[in-house]
Image 1: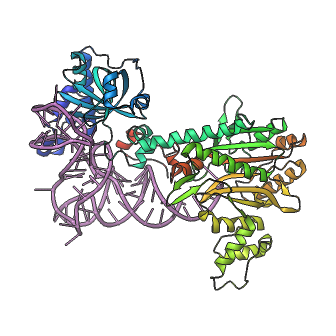
Image 2: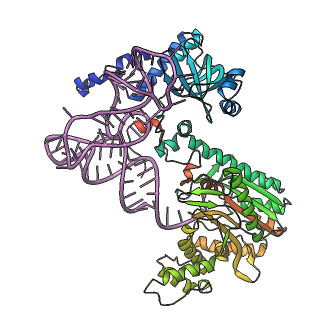
Image 3: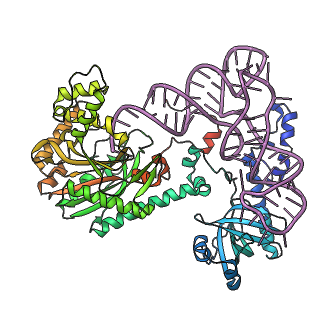
Amino acid sequence: MRCGSSTACSTRSIATGRLRRRLAPTQWIDGILMSSEKEQAAQRQAKLDELLALGVAPYPSRFGRTIDITALIERYGAQTGEELEAERPSVTVAGRILGIRSFGKASFLVLSDGRERVQVYVRADSVDAASLEIFRRLDFGDHVGVEGRVFRTRTNELSIWASRLEFLAKCRLPLPEKWHGLTDVEVRYRQRYLDLIVNPASRRVFEARARTVAAIRQFLNGRGFLEVETPMMQPMAGGALARPFITHHNALDIDLYLRIAPELYLKRLTVGGFEKVYEINRNFRNEGISTQHNPEFTMLEFYEAYVDYEHLMQMTEEMLSHVAAQVTGGSDTPWGDHIVSFAPPYRRLSLRDAAAEAASQRLASVPSWREGTVTATDLRDRSRAEAVARALGLEVEPGHGAGRIATTIFEALWEADLVQPTFVYDFPTEVSPLSKQKADDPDTVERFELYAGGFEVANGFSELNDPVEQRARFEAQLRDRAAGDAEAHQMDEDYIRALEYGLPPTGGEGIGIDRLVMLLTNSPSIRDVILFPLMRPRTLEAATADDDGGDA
RNA sequence: GGGCCCGUAGCUCAACUGGCAGAGCAGCAGACUCUUAAUCUGUUGGUUGAAGGUUCGAUUCCUUCCGGGCUCACCA
């Protein structure tokens, strides 16, 4: 601070505008140039200094409220003015000031506990002298405690008739506007605290997220599942096909990977006798960022012994309808222009059948295509599958087999249209290194994915528990990796060793919590349901300082 | 990474074909003892994201960079 005192700053700055017009830029005096934000911060600090001079504690450490505002609304919200006048309930509340309407000797404050708001009526002749001094120096955004009685105004608004005010904390910076709020998405993500203060809808999203996770725990705990926590720092990142983040442990001098999935550890636990386990926690994948992808995201994975993927699909329907009921109060939730219904049963599509059917329809209008109808059998043959993919304008990598091509065709033709919850089942073995083959069809595994809102929400399968077959699958992955596929799975000898001790028949599933919350809150971007989504670092200082250097 | 778009006061937004950077809210000063986006009067606040270039003159046109959004690719 270049000014001797902030009050001097605020008075001198009044002349700044005129001075700036009359003086050449080189004559500007550094100390008196102030942005509006700094000027307002100085004015707010000056009010705090005045309170300090009056003997008011600027940052007290506690305040004894008798009720929070949310509870106050619940308790008195239904009472009439006459009832309140008869009872004259005394309350002491605390909150942030989100509105000030002043009429000289009488004023209204809007006080918020973050969830609910209540109006406070402050009359000069109803509060003590110290409270009046405090009131005169309050700003939009300050925290204040209020003692008074509950009543209704002439316009029937539930209010508190203040008898005493206590200063609790200063808001030193100007808040976003009360009417338009904060709409700049960059600021909303980077400074989530501001978003939460001024946008009640944003808070409701995260309350819904908490209810979602609570409802899932309630559902699984009620069925005898045990919640566990497995390593997030792993010597080998397995259980999914994705590129990991690498970190380093100094004492052991080893590289570790942030987990891309908890899957292999949870199945080790099933080997160990935990027949029903689940984990809800973060996965980390070092890949692109989009409206559906954040580098760290929250996944539910659960495993149950002695069940297969058919059981999982039914259980998923029961779980999601339970969660939807807990979060939204019903089974239906708005999603853009649609209504997504989580009421069972969900539509089921066999992957190759659905891919072949959609490809046939699409190719019927492609003149260069003369092969006629595409069948699911065609998609099991690499050269025919490749011909279909190319005719559809899809790229085919040399290392991709028929199964991978069929999956590509399915995703290209169906994914975006699967708005209502839909199980896509019977995946090619090639794209499913941890799933169990169908007894009569080794090219196909007992696996499904649940789509809703146009994206994948869940992935489940009958777990491959044959250690010899698992080793062969890993070896196939190693060949892909050698061919340049950085996301191919690595060999995990200890996991195979665990399977050798005997994994019972087991069904396992992962559900993307962020995406589920997107659906339940009608949020078009995953960043809307993650409190602090990953953003390119930009400190407030850097934003106002010179931008030079930086990487390419 | 590719394509398209955006960045102006604390916030929400204007500024015609290149011609003195504006409004509302917030803030400050004043009036007002039941308002609720209170109202009324006056008023402060800007390196127009940054750096270059073209031009007599750039918020506007060009280049590069920074940050963000959508989208495609990759993935969940």
